[in-house]
Image 1 (cartoon, one colour):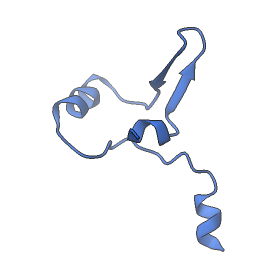
Image 2 (image 1 turned 135 degrees about the vertical axis):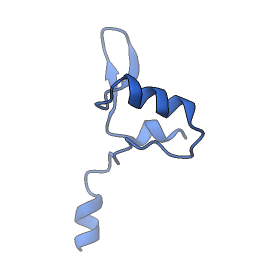
Image 3 (image 1 turned 90 degrees about the vertical axis):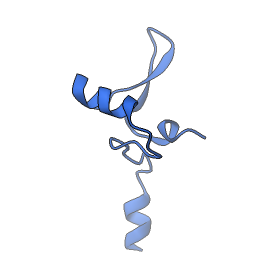
Image 4 (image 1 turned 180 degrees about the vertical axis):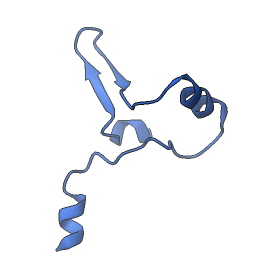
Length: 57
């Protein structure tokens, strides 16, 4: 599974009928993101809303 599919920035656009990343990044950030070979996205935000609650239990 792709990391983007679990990210809360990964949203569905009904008009274009496709998913896209709505992380707030400028052209420089995007350029660095696609030019680097890294295992994880620096903008990744876990979409699991209950993770903090489970940690507190």
